[in-house]
Length: 275
Ligand code: KMH
Ligand code: ZN
Image (cartoon, rainbow, N blue to C red; front, side, top):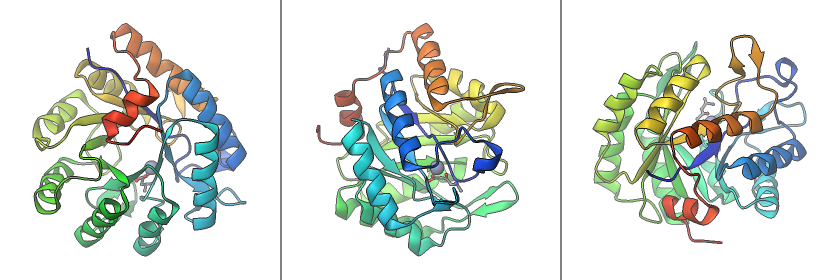
């Protein structure tokens, strides 16, 4: 069976610290979480940062400090979110690349996002993609909808392969406004992937976490887990740390006879040079 890449998305931009004090929002909390999750089996971290009031920010100085601290403390692949929060302007989202992460998220189209709109117009997508190519930053293509899969084909056909030559995508499922978090939707998405795609992972938001995780494991896909995507382990049982979610994923992976990749294997999968 295929080795397994586990990405942890520990914070996100949507949950307030007051509502969830265990959410890692300071740099110290983020680094501690990253180390724990790496020890548990995570190999990549998808990062959103917060300001001193724990509000989402794209402050460049903080982003650079975050990349440096995570690189110093772990061997995780550091992926910065270019999605930010639904309120972040596109120009600021492009500037995230100045923090020089290994990887950046790149969402393949605009999607309704609960009551909000997560804006990703085509000119923004192509600009972000070309800037990432020029800087050697490896994108992870975020697919919230089947239309995003078609847009990825259009992007790759027009602009070629990313830096490193590998194409890794992540299905983000179960967002109110996007594709549902079901095995049927995942099967449809995987069958529609462009032939250039070399690996895919999936995550289900909220109560779709388990169905999506089990479907992905059974289909040879990789996993993203973390408190960006889910805050309960079961109905009424809050997640107390990101590590719990990584541990659960590793446990299910063992049952599915999927072995967690080493750090070096994970970098190879993403088209990154070994450190
Ligand atoms: N916070 C969402 C609006 C990404 O990180 O690239 C967007 C998001 C996707 O989380
Ligand atoms: Zn994100």
